[in-house]
Image (cartoon, rainbow, N blue to C red; front, side, top):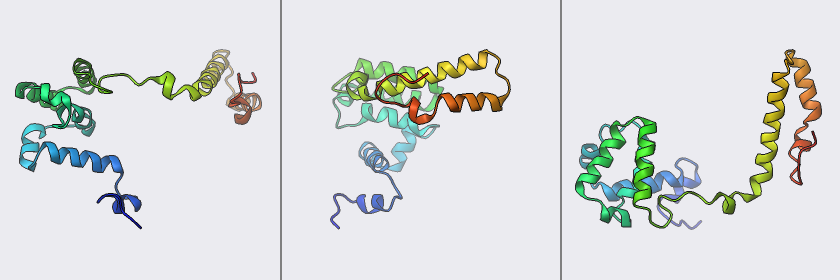
Length: 166
């Protein structure tokens, strides 16, 4: 078996996933010592905050070259101390401000998720139907379940050719 990278033997056994290895590498590139990492992000409460700031603080990215030391310190401070929703808004604004290539841009859903449109439409229809049934006061759960299963067998409802059979 040929190995593409150092992490592949570990990945093949299912112990560590490739994104974990990538993040670990980026962290080591940004912070050469554990002490410098702890100094900057020692009070970090959520790993997702670190993941969100990596594209901004990666020295190999164009954005990092535009940021001053004070701006980096502000990013670290927000990552450590902001509540989750406030941090999400802050980081979104920052990424849009320094948008470059894909950074700060929304995913083109029409391009990448077009095949799922009919599935989403059918699921919305199912949710609407279930909501209407609940509002009609169909209290006996068994009767509700029977009618729902009869009318919406999964195969019929998830018919990818068009609208569901209601």
